[in-house]
Image (tube, rainbow, N blue to C red):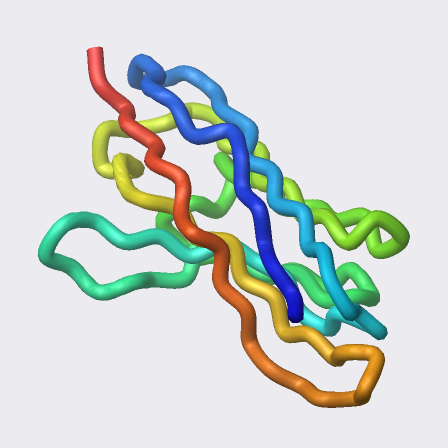
Length: 120
């Protein structure tokens, strides 16, 4: 019913920048929270940043001051601007949304993941 399509993952040098985008499509009535999580090989998925429909944001301590999350409620998109990237930011990044469908069902949706590699 609802899909999240991510883009923007790439190979970047330490200190560089990258922008991830995610678009939600389907039978959407509204989206409360959207955000990004990431997972490194052998580790648990962890929060990167989230943003509510009213614009309230939450960041992991490890990315505060370097990453910025934003969204377009009308377009159902969320973006993560990543600056001053470090090798430890190398992960698969997953888009997340808490969706209310047009039939008023509520559920979490995850994207397929996009790989960010920070290396010289």
